[in-house]
Image (cartoon, rainbow over all chains, first blue to last red; front, side, top):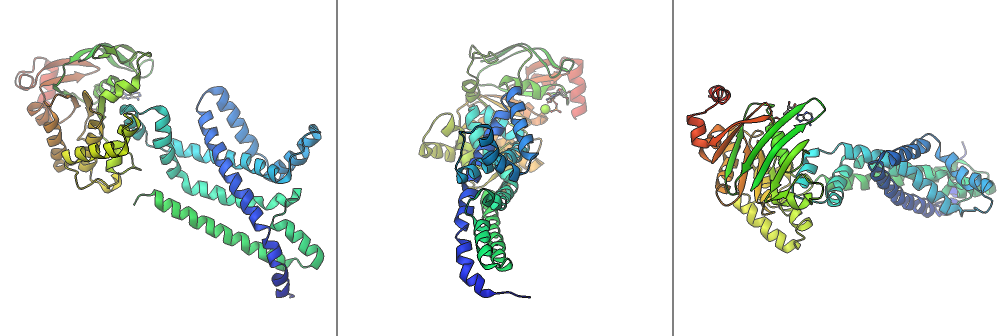
Length: 218
Length: 241
Ligand SMILES: Nc1ncnc2c1ncn2[C@@H]1O[C@H](COP(=O)(O)OP(=O)(O)OP(=O)(O)O)[C@@H](O)[C@H]1O
Ligand SMILES: [Mg+2]
């Protein structure tokens, strides 16, 4: 067994300098993904044509790996449209937003379907407008129904961003490639990444539990 | 005045639930709607505020046709409160917010004014100490009284109740019926679907007996219970005792 702590001491900070990129892409994609998910739920309920389109989007995204989606967007599309050259980080954000949006819309839809209709009827009977019902009754109740699944999707998203180095975005895996190329060590730098992701997701699930407790009004 | 003419309701092509119901509810009176299960009582009362859309016929509140696509339904509904069997309180809001929600969103009242009015109403229904309680922290009787305060907040002309005590045990039933009694004859028109014959007898001005999708008989409460005219009403009352 050869384990060299000095590699961690020397290159650990360099590897961890890829962490802000992980956080940035994950957080921005989570926000846009959530908005896309909401929009998809909303559009789906409008009419048949929109419903078909939204369902097609969800099927397409869920039926293909996000790794392929990213490369397809970054390399495939420019092959078809030579003038289209999206920057790397932006490509990641677009692909991950669209990707998590599809999963989140399914989750949010289940949340809406799980709402007790009685509360919506009560709001209608008071003369509350449709948009106020959607914002102040349906949305909070639906979100509360599925919050654990939403948080789980955010965690999945964070883990999935570990593929972005494939298009040259400088996250932790990208730093690893550099470090292992110059030191020939694999275990130590990967261990750093392993632990970093694990701690990150423990923190995320704690935040999720905290919000759940907040929303349970107990 | 709430006027119902030739009201028909079918849920599906073949399920005719109401046919040709005619009735005029006069202002300020309390009506009890009674009848056996499946007779269409809930459907009738839910058509009045368009929670169910009538298949045909007209419903008119103070001369405005309620079931007309050109009518602003939200305005009409703001004038007709409804209290449900299962309370239907907003789970994610405390008692006070449940009561003030529509004041803020529909009447566009400031939070201060809405809170003041909401507290008054909660005190009126005996929940002066429960402003901050969430529905899951309240008893059934408290929930229903909160739901009544919520409906009253809009200063409705008509208040619809669909079996407001059916989900409650006897003790809570009586606390809710007391609130109903205190509201009656205060200018509000109350239409109460109920299985509580004592309430119908003692509080209602008129009893409406429905069966198989129609109003079979209606008369002043005392008269109805002492001298039911139709055979079906007689049989219904005989079974109730
Ligand atoms: N949403 C619906 N879809 C189809 N049929 C319905 C629906 N709601 C009610 N019905 C049917 O309409 C009939 C009348 O129902 P309604 O609930 O109005 O009766 P009710 O007099 O209120 O009965 P109960 O005393 O049991 O509450 C019943 O046969 C019922 O099965
Ligand atoms: Mg009923």
